[in-house]
Image 1 (cartoon, rainbow over the protein chains, first blue to last red):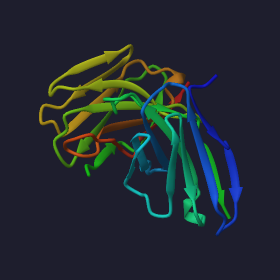
Image 2: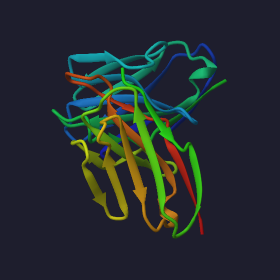
Image 3: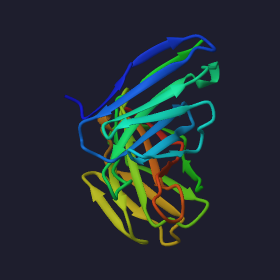
Image 4: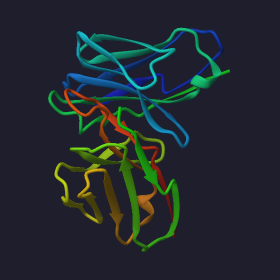
Length: 113
Length: 113
């Protein structure tokens, strides 16, 4: 089984809908991240969490919120989806004391119509 | 936060050719990382560099931490079809403290057999 899983893998939604992307990990890592990938723009950090009680905004947090339900789970929500949030979303984890080696999930491809 | 510029944006090369790509930052970095994203998957760490001037290899890949600490280079020798993908440089988003990563926009490599 994969160490970092994301659900759903693909999602189509309509403008204005609320949507949640979920991430689970079995690596026992404290640190978790959400990134967005757009063609030609690389990976942009949305939110990150260094432990269960720690939540931090990244480079592009507007329009997004997160919840760290447990060490192993980190969810990303779009409260009211808009078309320019169409992108590939990745969850990643890293061990305590290290941000260099991040382990990425397989990604969730989101289309907002 | 820090910003990274990667070049070239994309490359088309013949199998067997050597490849060079680079990354520059707006500020001094104390860590340089190179990740690779295979098509349809999340990025994976290839090489980590921690010291100015450091040269590190991973198989056919060699990366260097520039002596100015504002740049890094990745070379791939004798390219093969499985080298296809997007290569990202990365480094600390903030200059000090507990910091997540910032990623460059990536270099997309295509290998023609």
